[in-house]
Image 1 (cartoon, rainbow, N blue to C red):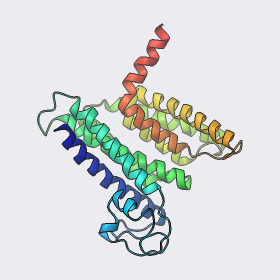
Image 2: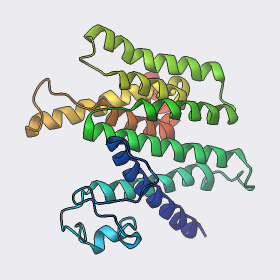
Image 3: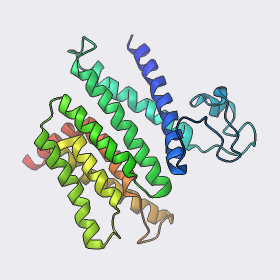
Length: 263
């Protein structure tokens, strides 16, 4: 039975990943989301059978059926990662929780919240990676939705609000000191969103982890010559990655770290 649920949820994640790819492109082009998908190279409208997550990419060998131009690897990778993260969220929230017997149990609300957070963080990751920008039209509505989710789940309102202020202020100070050279306004809103998602002390853990990941990535880019000292690096990709990690394993990481301090 567990394999059936994993397969079904994986397909759901693939579908959401396909939608995310479409949404990111439409946000960039300022186009409506209800229009049919099209090839960004030749703008030919894509038939449904050429729009099946991962499968169509493999069948078409990564090329558009009409113009034969290359389809970005972003599409199958995002679909695959979304599918895997959806399964992971289900496994952590439902399969490992023996108390989830009924459909109206709060663990299902938490699962929906986590799926939503995963989707938002993937959108932020892709957009910042490609265009070095974190959109307010993504972070602000997401912050409102997550706050409602967390309040329904019984989180402390004061904790969430203070955490949001801490997360946003951390980047606001950098923005003011550097006059916008170190971080952008989008990072401030993303920091606040992280606080609303993770609360205290999760937001601090996530920011700390993001800077560790970012430092390792920056060193790797410098060594390989892909970036020069002082080059701009999209911080949103590290913050979104750290948010998902702390969302699932924040308590484990915190206990591990406190254990190091004790011994």
